[in-house]
Length: 448
Image 1 (cartoon, rainbow, N blue to C red):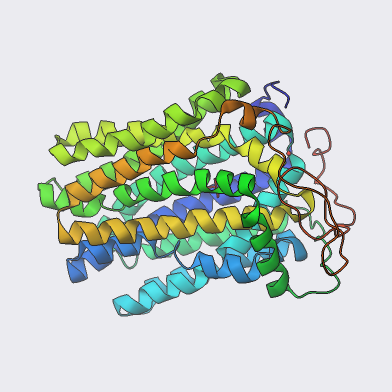
Image 2: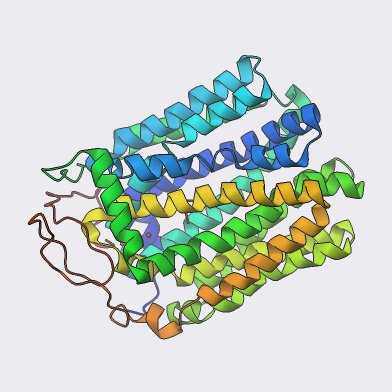
């Protein structure tokens, strides 16, 4: 594995990356605003920490269905119309939430239905990034995306507070719709209409999605890398989702809710900036375990009910720990088959988002049974335990150190791709034409 560092200039020189970076950043800001507005609406209507936490996560949980049944569409359909359709659906849903009076269950159901398609859209976007950025440029591109995610969440949370104060929580959702519309237009007019990977001749989308996901999860190395990216974020997001309830039980001022929810994205931005740009590639890999510990340890201190300022510092420190993922991403790209990258990134996104939905639900239920501070602390403890998933550095540094895949003839006569890690049916992807300027730079969490 090459240890040569890339630069921001090289990454931003790729037109396709610029378009995906800008559109996804705007969409993440919109998602953050929606989460704040809906959480405020639901908590005000019900007073339930559990429902408030579920509202935080309702856009995540249903993604398991979309990833399991439709993940292969990320490779089978042209990426530009697919991504535009995703942002368009988010826009229509936000308009409905803002303009139509709905009961709480209907609001949550609408967000959940739209979320089913998210793994497909994220998979298509992830495939494009991995196609146009290679080597350390890919990791730096992911770092930039994560920093943009943190910045966009901060912007969305800040705008959410202002918009809720000015318009009310429900009408503030109009800003979410406007942002998703802008994101869709950026992709439609800024991204080249690249081809899809041709589908296998003997199976439909659902069959291929299920079979490929099963194959990926059956590979021990791919499975370990997926769990390492899924579980720490799922547990610590469970702590983040309880900030509304925690601030309420502590008697913090209303402004403290936005502050506490913004601290983790701020820490993520700083952590990715430092680790992604200032730390050499091989050192990033060796920092995976320490950064996982940094992600999980600060929430444990919430058990002692520290002052608001200390709570804020703890959440910033925890957010910085998200940079651990930068030491895992190249190993994951190496582990999955190139011809099924869209599906692999869809599976990664599905697990991330689904478990980030399960985490808040589980710890929200625990908070209802005990107290928010104990649930936040336990979320930190469980995050710390995931350090056991971190492989030895040599396995992450050397793409040949773990070799679990073997090219072979399947029972139905299809050839499989021979490479380290998982294999999928060998399908000729046809020509892929990156956007102008991508050829020299060519390689990858969903944003956000």
